[in-house]
Image (cartoon, rainbow over all chains, first blue to last red; front, side):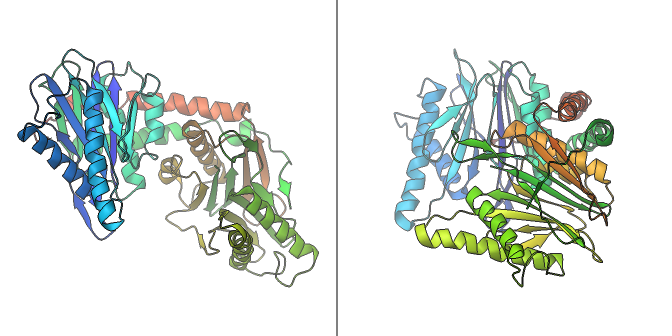
Length: 249
Length: 249
């Protein structure tokens, strides 16, 4: 499994990914799921991936090859981030289809693209295994791929377009921590990229392994704070009235 | 969708369920998913259900009929709670199989059984659509059916065997609130049953509708406390070091 979060804010982008892959519970490995594309200097493009590892590696390889071979349609020639998402969708579908036709097995994968092309706004896209894609919105400034449910409530609570990159980063780490606590197939190191709007060459990258003091501090302090919060809840017996409407059979 | 939580503690049981059912997004109704069985006074049995509504109603009807017709195997004749779980599994499988054989459609449902038979400990069982079942454990004193992921982290954080019924009830409501916030197919009223060990005739039932002041207080105070907790997190830029290990393609 995998868990990746992309957050698109007024201030820029925050991308976060775990690094655990598994093909069966006894075949667990560690792979980076965050890839910065080597592009022309007018753009910054970062891809995160979830799903079948052979598919995502195949997609990455094809993207690189299209640049090297000067294909007319590649990550440097396209003028809109949405067109890059469309291109990634096509590469992804072709990769999946090839194996499906050969064997019947569908090696699904999902991608997330975050970045900016000069003269336009930063943006975020999630690309489905069917090749179509969605972007984030004002009301929901984030997208998730992989094991998304455990860590969703905390994103829903704290993120708005006005959230700072710093706060969104902390929010992502809490979301990631809750997910790792509930699903053993999501694991460290955690990679996180802060992309301040219009800073094409200056995304800030963190790689936090399991023993990273900051990751441990977040985990410890969040647990502390939640315990405190729990103790502060209004008491049931002081405030709620039992009834006798229980359905009997 | 549905969300039900069962918690089995040293002090007794806490059962919590939502009341929303849907057959397609334009066919949303309200049904209780918590049923207390009318039993002999030596036992207290409560069933919660998730999944196909026709199946769960059929199961409930069959349970009632087996008692009325004095079937040799019914909820009053069995001496162990595990045997009641086994019986419910058989009823459930028969109900599902009938429709599957007739139409090919598999109207799956999952049940949760909580209760106590005099002379034995209270216990909790989750019964799968295949008829087999599991119970909770010392390390994981709770079970969930339905939309379980959004509300799981808070259960993992706070519940141990020693948790009081009161605290477990509050924890359940927070878990339910997080789930309702993230999934529109889980909704009020929330039913909650506190069963103190050995109090066969005195389970305490609450039915909290959307405007219930206590439910609103929990929601409001939890949001407040989490905001406070979030503000108290250690700052990224003061504590974490960026690196340049970002994978480039």
